[in-house]
Amino acid sequence: MKNNNKFNSFMIKSFRTDDESVIKGTKKIRYHYTSPSAFLSIIDKRQIRFTDIRYLNDKSEGVYLIKLIINFFEKYKNEYQYSRELFFNLIKLHSIKELEELNVTKIDYNMPIPYMEQRHFVFCMSAKQDSLNMWNYYVNNGNYQGYNIGFSVNKFLKTFDINVDKFIDPFTVYYGDVLYKEAEQYKEIKSFFDLIEKKLSKSHTKQEYDYFLIQIRNYIESNEAFFKNPAFESEKEFRIVIEIADERVHRPKNNYAGENNKQIEDEFTVKNGLIVPFLLVKFDCDAITNVTISPITEFGIAKESVKELLKNKIGSNIEVKKSDIPIRF
Image (cartoon, rainbow, N blue to C red; front, side, top):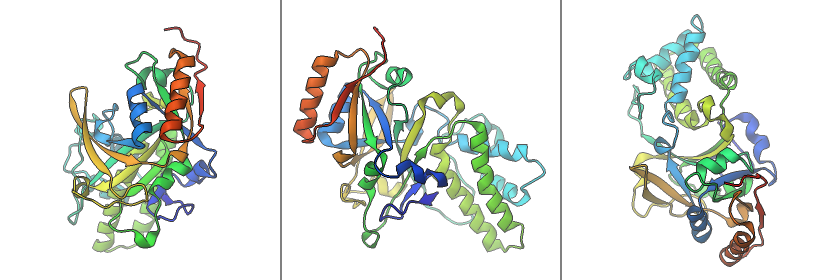
């Protein structure tokens, strides 16, 4: 993870080093598909919901990267002696079989010292401005009725920016495009373990060994949201992830970072019979670049009401356009 020096805060970090190009200027746009009721709530309250990663629709979230690393070491059987030993020592509280079969919802790490458990809350967007699959899956119960909101990535991330001198007990914000292709995933994993192996191949102390054990755990937790099963590749997902200590999530009257987030709200909702935790994050509405109306929503009257809503709640003349997908029902 690389900190982007476009921000004052060193706690806003890109997933990949080449992701600096993602937020150069304000021209890079990513799109959030949502239902009519959720769209109204976002605009009315100027808040975005960051959902606990364990409750997203992909049940392998949080475990898939570990499965990839297991397969990586199987692929390089005769290499990475020290990294391999560290990794399998780190996950030895679980059987390899249950990890490979993704039958784990929470990883218990074998750490040399006590560590503070981190939680991960995710806001999902897409690189696709007008996708039939995204309209079908993420708007109003698969009936193609909803909206997507275009966000300037750069301006949205500035929601979390703050003068470093004022930074107290921070959380970390990660961002980037999700990796789906196995070749790219293994390349990213290999790059990390090449560095670990190079350092450990020299003589090292028990203290250094433990240090790199912690680094591997940190790598997994910070990157797990950006590795997904290839079956989801059509989503072309871009994610912003809040990593925060578990003990801070429900702390009353908590002071968080950023001018818009002196206090982030933690809430719960019901989804598919589950009680789902999430964080509500206030954002600067200047980050909104445009709104697209879904394919079969009656465009004329929908456009008028959306423009009135935006003018009334934001005071801005944001572009509102219709999906180009020619679907009838």
